[in-house]
Length: 145
Image 1 (tube, rainbow, N blue to C red):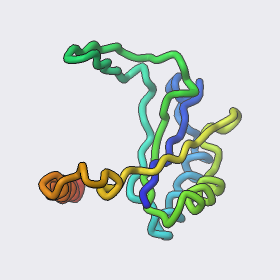
Image 2: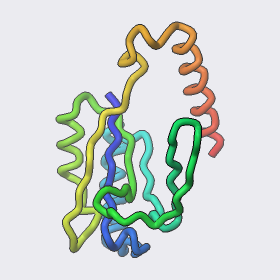
Image 3: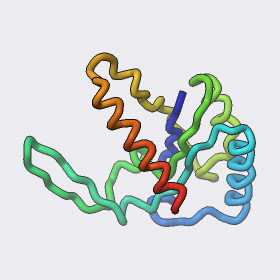
Image 4: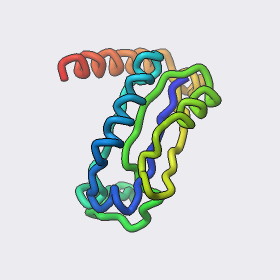
């Protein structure tokens, strides 16, 4: 099972305050544990929403809103992508995580990633083949990066 582990933003992360050396070292050690356990597939921090944009879809129209966005607790500051056996295992790993927002109340959200099989009969053999090709192409790109 794949899970996206979402680190929620704080006022500091949205203000562009970078983590100190102590937190970077703690997160580095934690990431080492995740990699050694064979569960971490990816993980990145994100720039503040002031450097981002949102695209709103209304029918066939698109509108763009430039950041920053006001509701900090609903914003994402970073993420991991993990391969684990269960949601319970993901929860146990998150509980070991250093507080990503020291000095404040931090929050990490755990969300399961859909698997191709989750889409049932709507995922036709042709669509499954396309999905497999896209995943293979994506892996090739990641190896070049």
